[in-house]
Length: 119
Image (cartoon, rainbow, N blue to C red; front, side):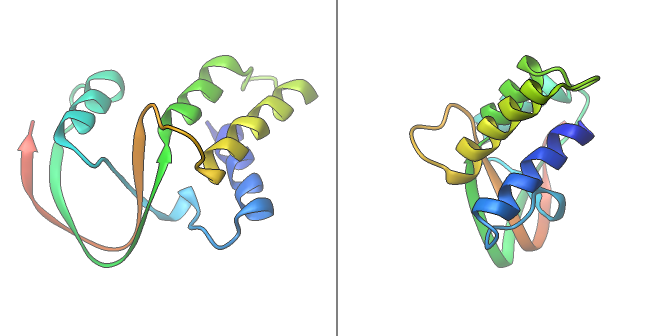
């Protein structure tokens, strides 16, 4: 995952430097159904919290592009072609164009946990 996140960060700095880094945000979902979908797929023992953004900003991007990049690219011993493929996914992610298969909300600011919704 380090290679993947580094590639996404490198592209962000190059094409959309005004957007927040994935390294410094809280990830959220706009519906309980999407949060549950994420939990089932990636963190089945995790909790779903109801949160509120008190101060800051949020940005919606297509999380499926990150998953697709991780599943279709050799991240263990990446070659030049793998890094180019990662950058293509990252560019599509940061530009935020087109319909989103799995919107994820990147939240930068103060987030308050209101409670546990599902556990």
